[in-house]
Length: 274
Image (cartoon, rainbow, N blue to C red; front, top):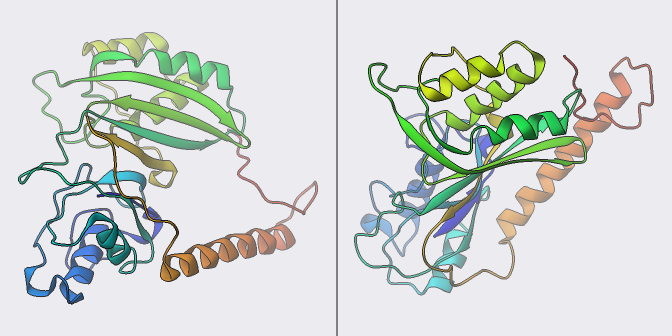
């Protein structure tokens, strides 16, 4: 099953007692649904376990069911309004979503004073294999941990810088630390020589994590095509989207009327400066 979710409403993917998580909400809904009931799984094999606040457009999980792919999509899309199942395909028993051919992440950074060309040039330095001990969390310090990126692109979409990273696998926190490294290198707080030394594993950097809300698991790649696709959002999902759009528009309208600004108050956008 290919699925996405708005990470703002969840404490990450993995089930945690007393906290709303993506896995916990799906499992709870499956246990309550008559089609699954007592036969609902205890855990869900998933391609990527996202952190709190991180969203997904194309994560993937495996689920055993007697329903057809199209029927299963309709069923799941009626369970949790801020989780969206988009595709389904039959696979062999024991299939593990984590064994994907690759993953693509996108990070949205407010453009502010950033220079797109500078970010693009810095990002290219991450293409290829490198030591990720400075760019991940919970890694052993006494030996190199190597990952390979096949693509690192930076584009501008309106008020946003869009950083797209692609590779077979990522360590915990890797994308957010790379974003922090790009920001620090552009500002001069981190030299390009130090950044390159960290990628070689010759030195360790104490990088912060970029904000999770900007990160989207964009796609998980497999050597097969996705099958059944739903025609539209379910009613609960449509109500969720309509409510979120209204909340966003109202928030912007309120801020534009109460915030002391020197220019137009018609719009409050994501402009930031150092």
